[in-house]
Image (cartoon, rainbow, N blue to C red; front, side, top):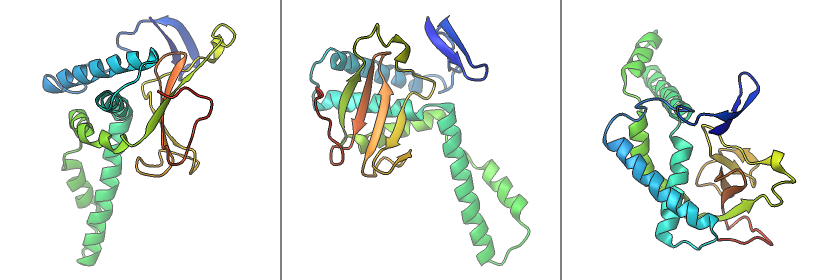
Length: 212
């Protein structure tokens, strides 16, 4: 079971079944994509176990960990919808500008129809794309933030949701500032008491902390 907070009802369920939470059947299609996800999740879980045990990881393990974290940040329905909506808006601006240059008028409906007929990115395509894109964060360092004295601060456990990864840039004071900006931070809880923070070591440093 898992503790669940229902946002729409502002209600906490202490022991909800894990099955079907934040999930959709065959969201990634059948076959190869699901098999690939199982492999990536298995590799990521092994490295997370080593990290939480305080063991050092080599570059290959770090890459597996970062690919797992990056995948969690893009594999949600909300993220896919956001990418597709942004793509639609960009295409509409380009087509509208081209129509204005050519002196075409009253073609908004035609432009909308072209955009709607155009294929949007599917979840399985996003997973495949992540196999390359995660390498953009390999230059980040990482630390594990732990909650100590668990019994005293039980009510302050880390929480996780259907979008488990937070992108934040403390240097620029903004969320989702871009993977290649100075100061990028990527945060994901690994348990109720441990959170991993990927950070730009050119901007930040952590004092009095055991970095793995």
